[in-house]
Amino acid sequence: LMAAALAQRNKQLKAAVHYTVGRLCQKIGEDHRRPFSRQAIAAIAETTFRQCDIFAKDLEAFARHAKRSTVSVDDVKLVARRSTALSIHIQNKSDELTQEHMSLKKKTTAKRKNTETEEESRE
Image (tube, rainbow, N blue to C red):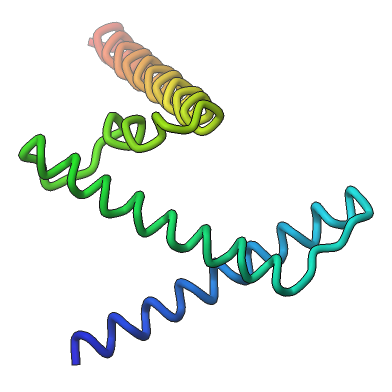
């Protein structure tokens, strides 16, 4: 039963990847006035799916090697290291998220200080 459920989930994921790749190829094809054949879309979708599977296994292995049960940002950066463009993109996203996190922390801290100051002035 478990194997059947996994196989079904795998089929759904594959279909979702194929659909998304198809939409992207259609958009890019229109932008460049160069349509993609069905075979090209299927090949790109299959390659994408297989690469994601490899990434997932690598991420699990990196986390396990570090004796963690959760995949970290550093694991993702490690997976991306072979592709300069992907590595730069991941690093930029990581920096962006860190900035957002720090910004939210500052706002929360400032709000807390404001609330404390208001309460003190009322006393």
